[in-house]
Amino acid sequence: MKKLLAAVFMFSAVYTQAQVKIGDNPSTINSNSLLEMESTNKGFLPPRVALNSISSVSPLTATVPSGMLVYSTGGTLPNGYYYWDGVQWNLVGTGGLKAVVKTANATLTKIETLVLASNDITLTLPVVTAADNGMSITVKNNGSHLHLVTVQGNGVATIDAVTLAKLTRWCGQTFVVYNGNWVAKEKINSAKNLIDVNANSSWTTIDEAVEFLELHMSGPTVMRLGEETYDIDATINIDLNFPLTIQGLSYGTATIAAATGLANKPMFRCVSDCYFKMVQFDARSLTNYGTLAGEDAIRFVGPGTYNEIKDCTFDRFYNAILDSTDAEIWVFETDISNAQNNGILIHSAQDSVIVKVAETDFIGCKRGINMSKGLKATLQLASGGYYNATATDTAIVYRPTTFTSFISISITGNSWNNTGKYIEGFDFTRSDGRDANAIVESNAGMGDKRPNCFMSLLNNATATTLTATTTWYKAVWVNTSSTTCKWTVGDNRITYQPVNRKDAYISISGNIVTSSSGAVVNIGLVKNPSGSSSTSITRYGETTLYASSGIPLQFSTVVYLSNVAPGDIFELWINSSTASITVTVQDVQWLVNTQ
Image (tube, rainbow, N blue to C red; front, top):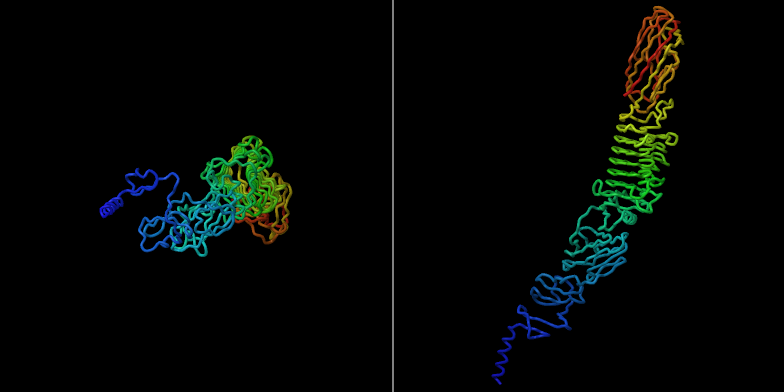
């Protein structure tokens, strides 16, 4: 018996130092394994414990060596396999975690580690402490393009030092506990209020992005277009709480194209502030689109808005741009081609519309800019190119019967290809000064419309009677002919019309005949006279002549007057050292220029 026990003991000692296999095929064991289990119908069941903190070994006791493996169930930590690394428990893999679906506001628990959310909801992360360091929860928005999922800490807990994170469609984020707060794992920083529209974004169309902003816009926003082409099959109405910028990634990279369904409708209808930058607008993509009324690229219809168009192109719209209210629009460095009606149509139903266009080319447009309707308008058209295609095309049109008044019109520094008509509708010869305040200067292809006039008198026989030697008298004549720009010209009278003051150069030459020999006759230009005679009046360019009866005497004077004001009147007056004589101004050439 003693020998048998000794043999068993010796065998056991050897066996405990050998490899062990449990289950099927016990005689076959992998040479590298210390313990091997093999079965086709049974599993491995490890110790099951309830872990409540990743930093506490409890419910295990004493010192737990690194590598200890348990399965946690029933604790506050998510169920799963955990191993101890000497400092904390680590969850082994997450591929098998079950997704939790949330469609309404909720406070998450620590075991809800993968959340699929939809609708406009707020998810509150669980209360955590430093003992939970390393625990993570992943939230993904798998809703529609309209949905916004907001994730916030519990109580005073923050996420990356801010109170909340927002997730749009198809966006997900893993939130990791660190010292009682949360940090976003692999966070990608992006500009606030910047949304991308492309095949890989939360929004794949411009319309989707606008619909989202109608619900969730929190400040001025940039919509960035990353695809080559965006088809528009219905009018996009932009009526938002803050300004919206729609822009391409670079010049010429993004095209907004007309598509089936857009017939007889505009592409964009802007009620709120809109900026378009580095975008190509194409009407040619839809057969015959742009040839009928209503088929416009952009209509600004919101009152009191501010809008910009920069570095854009427009091709073959009925009206590329239409301003029908008092909206202020600025157009910079843009090309407008083949407009079937107008490149820019100003047809404002409200007063005080503002339109400013700079460094913009109008190519083959029926009308480049059409000032069709307005009141108290402000327009500035500078440094543009107008390249008409036919003899019936017009670069700039002003329609005073419906465009009834303006605060300022400035048309300067433009060029024209001498085809068709250039700048039409203004009449600077009117005596009422209707258009006198429009500045039309330095435009290649036409003369400047600065205030100027010319008066001609030939063979006048009407004499002026000089009764007293101490009195000055207005010379009497009836003009033979005259031309004018922004001056009202009458018989021996010119009146300055514009509100903007200028300096005037006045040149007057002619001849006179007196009824008395030996008389000394003085001729001078009088400003703003009262009546037709005066004993005390200021003269400019006064000239003295020594007369011989019946013999014509030539005279000439040049006057420089600064700061000529609206309504200033100028007349030629005469005085003589001899009383009761007559002076006949026979011929006059009167020329006025301003600067």
